[in-house]
Image (cartoon, rainbow, N blue to C red; front, side, top):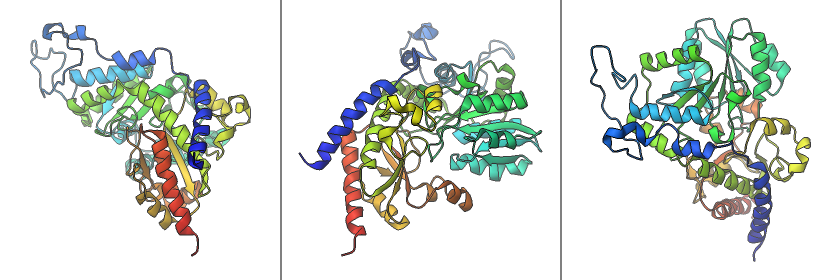
Length: 433
Protein backbone atom coordinates (compact mmCIF):
# COMPACT_ATOMS: atom_id res chain seq x y z
CA UNK A 1 0.00 0.00 0.00
CA UNK A 2 1.48 3.38 -1.04
CA UNK A 3 1.86 6.38 1.26
CA UNK A 4 -1.22 8.11 -0.15
CA UNK A 5 -3.46 5.11 0.56
CA UNK A 6 -2.10 4.70 4.09
CA UNK A 7 -2.69 8.37 4.85
CA UNK A 8 -6.14 8.31 3.26
CA UNK A 9 -7.24 5.27 5.29
CA UNK A 10 -6.03 6.91 8.50
CA UNK A 11 -7.86 10.15 7.66
CA UNK A 12 -11.10 8.28 6.93
CA UNK A 13 -10.97 6.46 10.25
CA UNK A 14 -10.49 9.69 12.16
CA UNK A 15 -13.15 11.50 10.13
CA UNK A 16 -15.71 8.75 10.64
CA UNK A 17 -15.41 8.92 14.42
CA UNK A 18 -15.60 12.68 14.44
CA UNK A 19 -18.57 12.93 12.11
CA UNK A 20 -20.62 10.76 14.44
CA UNK A 21 -20.04 13.36 17.17
CA UNK A 22 -20.22 16.54 15.10
CA UNK A 23 -23.28 15.88 12.92
CA UNK A 24 -26.40 16.80 14.88
CA UNK A 25 -29.30 17.57 12.50
CA UNK A 26 -32.39 19.44 13.64
CA UNK A 27 -35.20 17.14 14.75
CA UNK A 28 -37.43 16.18 11.84
CA UNK A 29 -35.62 18.26 9.23
CA UNK A 30 -35.15 15.28 6.91
CA UNK A 31 -38.93 14.83 6.86
CA UNK A 32 -39.51 18.53 6.26
CA UNK A 33 -37.13 18.46 3.30
CA UNK A 34 -38.91 15.41 1.87
CA UNK A 35 -42.50 16.61 2.25
CA UNK A 36 -42.42 20.32 3.09
CA UNK A 37 -44.48 22.77 1.06
CA UNK A 38 -46.73 20.27 -0.67
CA UNK A 39 -49.24 17.55 0.10
CA UNK A 40 -50.85 15.53 -2.73
CA UNK A 41 -54.27 16.12 -1.16
CA UNK A 42 -53.93 19.76 -2.27
CA UNK A 43 -54.74 18.61 -5.80
CA UNK A 44 -57.58 16.16 -5.31
CA UNK A 45 -59.23 17.01 -8.63
CA UNK A 46 -56.17 16.12 -10.69
CA UNK A 47 -55.53 12.79 -9.00
CA UNK A 48 -53.26 13.73 -6.10
CA UNK A 49 -49.91 13.86 -7.96
CA UNK A 50 -47.02 12.94 -5.67
CA UNK A 51 -44.78 15.54 -7.33
CA UNK A 52 -46.31 19.04 -7.56
CA UNK A 53 -46.98 20.12 -11.15
CA UNK A 54 -45.27 23.11 -12.77
CA UNK A 55 -47.72 26.01 -13.01
CA UNK A 56 -46.64 27.71 -16.23
CA UNK A 57 -49.71 29.88 -16.73
CA UNK A 58 -48.91 33.60 -16.58
CA UNK A 59 -52.48 34.54 -15.65
CA UNK A 60 -55.44 32.98 -13.83
CA UNK A 61 -59.21 33.01 -14.19
CA UNK A 62 -60.87 35.02 -11.43
CA UNK A 63 -63.97 33.81 -9.60
CA UNK A 64 -65.40 37.32 -9.92
CA UNK A 65 -63.73 40.67 -10.59
CA UNK A 66 -60.87 41.06 -8.12
CA UNK A 67 -61.53 37.70 -6.40
CA UNK A 68 -58.91 34.96 -7.01
CA UNK A 69 -56.25 32.95 -5.21
CA UNK A 70 -53.79 33.94 -7.93
CA UNK A 71 -54.26 36.68 -10.48
CA UNK A 72 -50.92 37.13 -12.28
CA UNK A 73 -47.87 34.91 -12.03
CA UNK A 74 -45.55 37.72 -10.95
CA UNK A 75 -47.58 38.11 -7.75
CA UNK A 76 -47.80 34.38 -7.10
CA UNK A 77 -48.38 30.89 -8.44
CA UNK A 78 -48.68 27.35 -7.13
CA UNK A 79 -45.09 26.34 -7.96
CA UNK A 80 -43.63 29.32 -6.11
CA UNK A 81 -45.97 28.90 -3.15
CA UNK A 82 -44.89 25.28 -2.63
CA UNK A 83 -41.22 26.26 -2.68
CA UNK A 84 -41.66 29.21 -0.31
CA UNK A 85 -43.57 27.08 2.19
CA UNK A 86 -40.85 24.41 2.15
CA UNK A 87 -38.00 26.89 2.67
CA UNK A 88 -39.87 28.62 5.51
CA UNK A 89 -40.34 25.24 7.21
CA UNK A 90 -36.68 24.28 6.76
CA UNK A 91 -35.60 27.48 8.53
CA UNK A 92 -38.34 27.01 11.15
CA UNK A 93 -39.70 30.35 9.99
CA UNK A 94 -43.20 31.55 9.16
CA UNK A 95 -42.83 33.31 5.81
CA UNK A 96 -40.58 33.17 2.78
CA UNK A 97 -40.20 35.16 -0.43
CA UNK A 98 -38.11 33.79 -3.30
CA UNK A 99 -36.39 35.87 -5.96
CA UNK A 100 -34.61 35.52 -9.29
CA UNK A 101 -31.19 35.59 -7.58
CA UNK A 102 -29.56 35.98 -4.19
CA UNK A 103 -28.58 39.53 -5.10
CA UNK A 104 -32.20 40.28 -6.03
CA UNK A 105 -33.11 39.15 -2.51
CA UNK A 106 -30.47 41.46 -1.04
CA UNK A 107 -31.71 44.25 -3.30
CA UNK A 108 -35.21 43.79 -1.91
CA UNK A 109 -33.91 44.32 1.63
CA UNK A 110 -32.07 47.45 0.52
CA UNK A 111 -35.27 48.80 -1.06
CA UNK A 112 -36.88 48.85 2.38
CA UNK A 113 -34.32 51.47 3.38
CA UNK A 114 -34.27 55.17 2.55
CA UNK A 115 -31.67 57.77 1.66
CA UNK A 116 -29.38 58.61 4.61
CA UNK A 117 -29.95 55.20 6.20
CA UNK A 118 -26.91 53.22 7.31
CA UNK A 119 -25.86 49.56 7.08
CA UNK A 120 -23.31 47.70 9.20
CA UNK A 121 -21.91 44.70 7.30
CA UNK A 122 -19.36 42.02 8.11
CA UNK A 123 -16.05 42.87 6.45
CA UNK A 124 -15.71 39.39 4.96
CA UNK A 125 -18.69 38.99 2.61
CA UNK A 126 -19.42 37.38 -0.70
CA UNK A 127 -17.92 39.79 -3.24
CA UNK A 128 -21.25 40.43 -4.95
CA UNK A 129 -22.90 41.51 -1.69
CA UNK A 130 -20.10 43.93 -0.94
CA UNK A 131 -20.21 45.27 -4.49
CA UNK A 132 -23.96 45.86 -4.19
CA UNK A 133 -23.54 47.89 -1.00
CA UNK A 134 -20.54 49.87 -2.24
CA UNK A 135 -21.64 50.59 -5.81
CA UNK A 136 -25.45 50.37 -5.93
CA UNK A 137 -26.90 51.07 -2.47
CA UNK A 138 -24.55 54.03 -2.17
CA UNK A 139 -26.18 55.66 -5.20
CA UNK A 140 -29.41 55.82 -3.21
CA UNK A 141 -27.70 57.68 -0.38
CA UNK A 142 -27.36 54.56 1.79
CA UNK A 143 -24.00 54.29 3.52
CA UNK A 144 -22.28 51.10 4.71
CA UNK A 145 -19.66 50.39 7.34
CA UNK A 146 -17.73 47.13 6.97
CA UNK A 147 -16.48 45.77 10.29
CA UNK A 148 -15.03 42.58 11.77
CA UNK A 149 -18.05 41.38 13.73
CA UNK A 150 -15.98 38.82 15.60
CA UNK A 151 -14.96 41.80 17.72
CA UNK A 152 -18.23 42.69 19.44
CA UNK A 153 -16.92 45.97 20.83
CA UNK A 154 -15.83 47.03 17.37
CA UNK A 155 -19.23 46.07 16.01
CA UNK A 156 -21.07 48.03 18.70
CA UNK A 157 -18.98 51.10 17.93
CA UNK A 158 -20.01 50.85 14.26
CA UNK A 159 -23.73 51.22 15.04
CA UNK A 160 -25.09 54.71 14.35
CA UNK A 161 -28.32 56.57 15.03
CA UNK A 162 -29.32 56.04 11.38
CA UNK A 163 -28.36 52.35 11.21
CA UNK A 164 -31.28 50.39 9.80
CA UNK A 165 -29.76 47.05 8.75
CA UNK A 166 -27.02 44.69 9.93
CA UNK A 167 -25.70 42.12 7.43
CA UNK A 168 -23.94 39.04 8.79
CA UNK A 169 -22.36 36.15 6.92
CA UNK A 170 -21.32 33.16 9.01
CA UNK A 171 -19.29 31.23 8.07
CA UNK A 172 -17.88 33.97 5.88
CA UNK A 173 -16.89 33.80 2.24
CA UNK A 174 -14.06 33.02 1.63
CA UNK A 175 -12.25 33.19 5.00
CA UNK A 176 -14.58 30.84 6.94
CA UNK A 177 -14.83 33.27 9.85
CA UNK A 178 -17.65 32.79 12.34
CA UNK A 179 -19.89 35.48 13.81
CA UNK A 180 -21.79 35.00 17.06
CA UNK A 181 -25.26 35.61 15.63
CA UNK A 182 -27.08 35.80 18.96
CA UNK A 183 -24.54 38.23 20.43
CA UNK A 184 -24.65 40.56 17.42
CA UNK A 185 -28.46 40.39 17.28
CA UNK A 186 -28.74 41.14 21.00
CA UNK A 187 -26.38 44.14 20.81
CA UNK A 188 -28.22 45.42 17.74
CA UNK A 189 -31.72 45.16 19.15
CA UNK A 190 -30.69 46.70 22.48
CA UNK A 191 -29.27 49.63 20.53
CA UNK A 192 -32.41 49.94 18.40
CA UNK A 193 -35.06 47.25 18.15
CA UNK A 194 -36.09 48.55 14.71
CA UNK A 195 -32.76 47.60 13.09
CA UNK A 196 -33.14 44.57 10.82
CA UNK A 197 -30.57 41.83 11.47
CA UNK A 198 -29.96 39.75 8.35
CA UNK A 199 -27.87 36.56 8.17
CA UNK A 200 -26.67 35.16 4.85
CA UNK A 201 -26.98 31.40 5.43
CA UNK A 202 -25.79 30.31 1.98
CA UNK A 203 -22.59 28.54 3.11
CA UNK A 204 -24.42 26.45 5.72
CA UNK A 205 -27.89 25.87 4.26
CA UNK A 206 -30.93 25.41 6.48
CA UNK A 207 -29.73 21.89 7.27
CA UNK A 208 -26.79 22.98 9.43
CA UNK A 209 -27.81 26.41 10.76
CA UNK A 210 -31.01 28.31 11.59
CA UNK A 211 -30.18 31.98 12.26
CA UNK A 212 -33.76 32.80 13.29
CA UNK A 213 -33.21 30.66 16.38
CA UNK A 214 -30.42 33.03 17.40
CA UNK A 215 -32.19 36.36 17.09
CA UNK A 216 -31.88 37.17 13.40
CA UNK A 217 -34.85 38.92 11.80
CA UNK A 218 -34.23 37.69 8.25
CA UNK A 219 -32.36 34.77 6.71
CA UNK A 220 -30.91 35.37 3.26
CA UNK A 221 -30.11 32.53 0.86
CA UNK A 222 -28.58 32.21 -2.52
CA UNK A 223 -30.67 29.16 -3.37
CA UNK A 224 -28.40 28.69 -6.37
CA UNK A 225 -25.93 26.99 -4.05
CA UNK A 226 -26.51 24.22 -1.49
CA UNK A 227 -30.27 24.56 -1.18
CA UNK A 228 -30.83 23.68 -4.85
CA UNK A 229 -27.60 21.73 -5.10
CA UNK A 230 -27.59 20.99 -8.84
CA UNK A 231 -26.00 24.09 -10.44
CA UNK A 232 -28.93 24.48 -12.82
CA UNK A 233 -30.73 27.60 -11.60
CA UNK A 234 -30.12 31.05 -10.10
CA UNK A 235 -32.42 32.06 -7.23
CA UNK A 236 -32.54 33.72 -3.81
CA UNK A 237 -34.77 33.73 -0.74
CA UNK A 238 -35.65 35.76 2.35
CA UNK A 239 -37.17 34.02 5.40
CA UNK A 240 -38.76 35.63 8.46
CA UNK A 241 -40.44 34.52 11.70
CA UNK A 242 -42.99 36.54 13.69
CA UNK A 243 -42.31 39.52 11.44
CA UNK A 244 -45.64 40.01 9.69
CA UNK A 245 -45.13 43.69 8.86
CA UNK A 246 -41.60 43.11 7.57
CA UNK A 247 -42.82 40.19 5.49
CA UNK A 248 -45.57 42.37 3.99
CA UNK A 249 -42.92 44.88 2.93
CA UNK A 250 -40.78 42.16 1.37
CA UNK A 251 -43.78 40.61 -0.39
CA UNK A 252 -44.82 43.98 -1.79
CA UNK A 253 -41.36 44.65 -3.21
CA UNK A 254 -41.23 41.12 -4.64
CA UNK A 255 -44.47 41.90 -6.48
CA UNK A 256 -43.86 45.55 -7.36
CA UNK A 257 -40.20 45.25 -8.42
CA UNK A 258 -40.79 41.93 -10.14
CA UNK A 259 -37.47 40.12 -9.55
CA UNK A 260 -39.25 36.76 -9.32
CA UNK A 261 -38.13 33.28 -10.40
CA UNK A 262 -39.94 31.28 -13.06
CA UNK A 263 -42.33 28.47 -12.08
CA UNK A 264 -39.95 25.98 -13.68
CA UNK A 265 -37.03 27.22 -11.56
CA UNK A 266 -39.25 26.94 -8.47
CA UNK A 267 -40.03 23.35 -9.43
CA UNK A 268 -36.32 22.59 -9.88
CA UNK A 269 -35.38 24.13 -6.54
CA UNK A 270 -38.08 22.24 -4.65
CA UNK A 271 -36.85 19.05 -6.27
CA UNK A 272 -33.33 19.95 -5.10
CA UNK A 273 -34.51 20.49 -1.53
CA UNK A 274 -35.90 16.96 -1.42
CA UNK A 275 -32.33 15.62 -1.32
CA UNK A 276 -30.85 18.38 0.89
CA UNK A 277 -30.25 16.14 3.94
CA UNK A 278 -28.39 13.38 2.13
CA UNK A 279 -26.40 15.88 0.07
CA UNK A 280 -25.32 17.99 3.05
CA UNK A 281 -24.20 14.95 5.04
CA UNK A 282 -22.04 13.85 2.12
CA UNK A 283 -20.69 17.37 1.51
CA UNK A 284 -19.71 17.54 5.18
CA UNK A 285 -17.99 14.15 5.11
CA UNK A 286 -16.18 14.73 1.84
CA UNK A 287 -15.17 18.27 2.77
CA UNK A 288 -13.66 17.09 6.03
CA UNK A 289 -11.70 14.27 4.41
CA UNK A 290 -10.38 16.47 1.60
CA UNK A 291 -9.43 19.25 4.04
CA UNK A 292 -7.54 16.80 6.23
CA UNK A 293 -5.71 15.38 3.23
CA UNK A 294 -4.80 18.83 1.94
CA UNK A 295 -3.40 19.83 5.31
CA UNK A 296 -0.85 17.02 5.17
CA UNK A 297 0.64 17.98 1.79
CA UNK A 298 3.90 19.99 1.93
CA UNK A 299 2.74 22.37 -0.84
CA UNK A 300 -0.21 23.51 1.30
CA UNK A 301 0.53 26.46 3.56
CA UNK A 302 -2.78 26.62 5.40
CA UNK A 303 -6.31 25.20 5.36
CA UNK A 304 -9.31 27.22 6.58
CA UNK A 305 -12.20 25.10 7.81
CA UNK A 306 -13.76 26.99 9.62
CA UNK A 307 -12.40 30.31 11.04
CA UNK A 308 -9.00 30.03 9.44
CA UNK A 309 -7.56 27.54 11.91
CA UNK A 310 -4.86 25.70 9.96
CA UNK A 311 -4.77 22.50 11.99
CA UNK A 312 -7.94 20.51 11.51
CA UNK A 313 -6.53 17.69 13.58
CA UNK A 314 -7.03 19.73 16.74
CA UNK A 315 -10.26 21.58 16.04
CA UNK A 316 -14.00 21.23 15.65
CA UNK A 317 -14.37 17.89 13.94
CA UNK A 318 -11.41 15.85 15.12
CA UNK A 319 -11.07 16.71 18.77
CA UNK A 320 -14.50 16.95 20.28
CA UNK A 321 -13.00 16.79 23.77
CA UNK A 322 -10.77 19.77 22.98
CA UNK A 323 -13.45 22.16 21.82
CA UNK A 324 -12.67 24.59 24.62
CA UNK A 325 -9.27 25.29 23.06
CA UNK A 326 -10.79 26.24 19.70
CA UNK A 327 -11.02 30.06 19.50
CA UNK A 328 -14.67 30.06 18.39
CA UNK A 329 -15.74 26.68 19.74
CA UNK A 330 -18.57 28.22 21.73
CA UNK A 331 -20.07 29.62 18.51
CA UNK A 332 -19.84 26.26 16.77
CA UNK A 333 -21.59 24.48 19.62
CA UNK A 334 -24.25 27.18 19.93
CA UNK A 335 -25.31 27.78 16.32
CA UNK A 336 -23.95 25.08 13.98
CA UNK A 337 -25.17 21.50 13.53
CA UNK A 338 -22.38 20.54 11.12
CA UNK A 339 -20.51 22.11 8.24
CA UNK A 340 -20.71 22.13 4.46
CA UNK A 341 -18.12 21.17 1.86
CA UNK A 342 -16.44 24.58 1.67
CA UNK A 343 -12.67 24.80 2.15
CA UNK A 344 -10.20 27.63 1.64
CA UNK A 345 -6.57 26.74 0.99
CA UNK A 346 -3.32 28.71 0.72
CA UNK A 347 -0.65 27.10 -1.45
CA UNK A 348 3.11 27.53 -1.10
CA UNK A 349 3.53 29.10 -4.53
CA UNK A 350 3.09 32.22 -6.64
CA UNK A 351 -0.12 33.51 -8.18
CA UNK A 352 0.85 32.22 -11.61
CA UNK A 353 1.63 28.80 -10.21
CA UNK A 354 -1.75 28.81 -8.46
CA UNK A 355 -3.44 29.40 -11.82
CA UNK A 356 -1.47 26.53 -13.35
CA UNK A 357 -2.42 24.26 -10.45
CA UNK A 358 -6.14 24.75 -11.14
CA UNK A 359 -5.70 23.77 -14.79
CA UNK A 360 -3.94 20.52 -13.84
CA UNK A 361 -6.94 19.20 -11.94
CA UNK A 362 -9.22 16.64 -13.56
CA UNK A 363 -12.20 16.37 -11.17
CA UNK A 364 -12.33 19.88 -9.70
CA UNK A 365 -13.84 22.22 -12.29
CA UNK A 366 -12.44 25.77 -12.43
CA UNK A 367 -15.64 27.75 -12.00
CA UNK A 368 -17.39 30.24 -9.73
CA UNK A 369 -20.35 29.33 -7.51
CA UNK A 370 -20.55 26.51 -4.98
CA UNK A 371 -22.81 23.97 -3.35
CA UNK A 372 -23.56 21.79 -6.37
CA UNK A 373 -23.14 18.03 -6.55
CA UNK A 374 -19.93 18.54 -8.51
CA UNK A 375 -16.62 19.75 -7.07
CA UNK A 376 -15.52 23.27 -8.02
CA UNK A 377 -12.37 25.30 -7.43
CA UNK A 378 -11.68 29.00 -7.90
CA UNK A 379 -9.20 31.78 -7.10
CA UNK A 380 -11.22 34.39 -5.14
CA UNK A 381 -8.79 37.27 -5.73
CA UNK A 382 -9.42 37.22 -9.47
CA UNK A 383 -12.82 35.56 -9.63
CA UNK A 384 -15.61 35.80 -7.00
CA UNK A 385 -13.94 38.59 -4.99
CA UNK A 386 -12.29 40.55 -7.80
CA UNK A 387 -14.74 43.41 -7.18
CA UNK A 388 -13.58 43.77 -3.56
CA UNK A 389 -11.22 46.78 -3.29
CA UNK A 390 -7.58 45.65 -3.52
CA UNK A 391 -6.69 47.13 -0.12
CA UNK A 392 -9.57 45.20 1.50
CA UNK A 393 -8.50 41.95 -0.15
CA UNK A 394 -4.95 42.50 1.06
CA UNK A 395 -6.06 43.32 4.61
CA UNK A 396 -8.23 40.19 4.75
CA UNK A 397 -5.59 37.91 3.28
CA UNK A 398 -7.40 37.21 0.03
CA UNK A 399 -4.17 36.62 -1.83
CA UNK A 400 -3.16 35.25 -5.23
CA UNK A 401 -2.22 31.87 -3.75
CA UNK A 402 -5.61 31.40 -2.05
CA UNK A 403 -8.05 28.84 -3.44
CA UNK A 404 -11.69 28.22 -2.53
CA UNK A 405 -12.95 24.66 -2.94
CA UNK A 406 -16.55 23.51 -3.05
CA UNK A 407 -16.24 19.79 -2.39
CA UNK A 408 -18.92 17.81 -4.17
CA UNK A 409 -20.41 14.33 -3.92
CA UNK A 410 -17.73 12.38 -5.73
CA UNK A 411 -15.68 9.66 -4.04
CA UNK A 412 -13.47 11.63 -1.60
CA UNK A 413 -10.53 9.36 -2.38
CA UNK A 414 -10.74 10.29 -6.06
CA UNK A 415 -10.96 13.98 -5.14
CA UNK A 416 -8.00 13.74 -2.77
CA UNK A 417 -5.92 11.91 -5.33
CA UNK A 418 -6.76 14.51 -7.98
CA UNK A 419 -5.52 17.27 -5.68
CA UNK A 420 -2.42 15.35 -4.61
CA UNK A 421 -1.37 14.65 -8.19
CA UNK A 422 -1.68 18.35 -9.06
CA UNK A 423 0.14 19.34 -5.85
CA UNK A 424 2.94 16.85 -6.52
CA UNK A 425 3.35 18.31 -10.01
CA UNK A 426 3.40 21.80 -8.52
CA UNK A 427 6.06 20.68 -6.04
CA UNK A 428 8.18 19.14 -8.80
CA UNK A 429 7.87 22.15 -11.11
CA UNK A 430 8.71 24.56 -8.27
CA UNK A 431 12.08 22.96 -7.56
CA UNK A 432 15.15 24.14 -9.49
CA UNK A 433 16.48 21.69 -12.07
